Length: 172
Image (cartoon, rainbow, N blue to C red):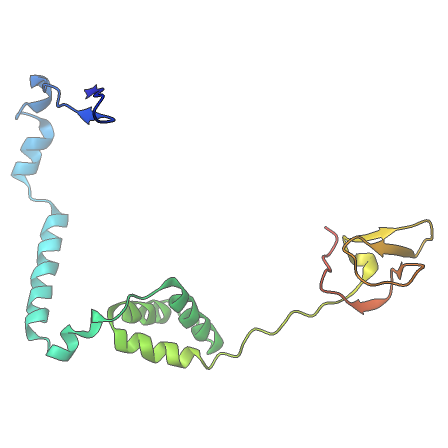
């Protein structure tokens, strides 16, 4: 139950529990007590295995994850490198990414290798004005003007001429 208090914006006061909601004879209560959850058992096995592995780890292995966290941009960079070297096996890609999350040294290694990827080339802006959404025709069947302010002759732009234009967007 929420009570309005002028000193505070809101404060919560517990309501009395109804006895029907807390009966120990619930079907789920008896089933939970009778059978341990398989998920809980599996989690306990994993925790036990990890404890054993952590005890046998060397000091350099235990300090590996002490570096900075693995960012989304770093993951994108490494995935781009994997694409560049034509690695397409999803299992291999997942292993590399998992290793980068777990091991700072591996992350540094893969980020260094990712520097090999050449930069993305600038887009080619060669196009005809007639195919552009910003080309506005005039009374002449082949002439028009650019609504984005690209330089043009007094008569306008010829729709079939191939020209360099960063404003070009295909009609859609």
